[in-house]
Amino acid sequence: MTSEKLTLEDIQNKTPIPEILQAEWARDQVNQLFDDLRDGADVQHVQLRSTTTDTVATLAEAKLAFDSGEAQAIQVRYLFEQEVWCDTILPGDPTTKIVRSRLPVEGNLGS
Image 1 (cartoon, rainbow, N blue to C red):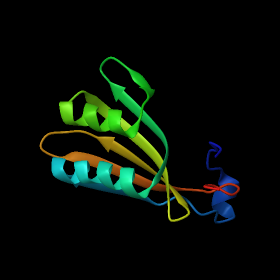
Image 2: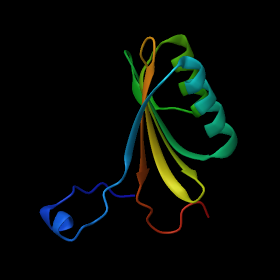
Image 3: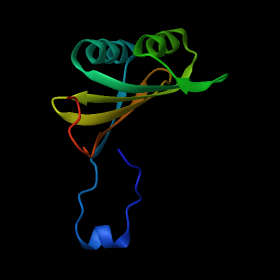
Image 4: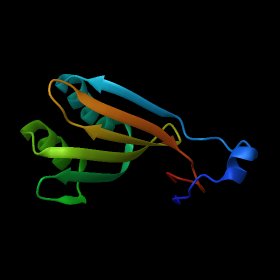
């Protein structure tokens, strides 16, 4: 995966822009998301940011940080049904913001 900025030429050529979805979820829904990712997705990267760190983590570590209230932001990149997704989890009270985007796939992922 590469990080490329959208250019004027991309817009003129009608290059598809990744879809971005946002939602506000209750704590139990976010915990279900962690379980669903663990059980049904190929998690490729987890980034955890707290007041003391910004580091690569496991999905289990990220869930613990969310449950304990330590996490400020969690980003999970995963492969699901041959598509790459990125979920950003922004804990809040009483709801947590989820920002989900489907990422462009380069090459043959998951093989």
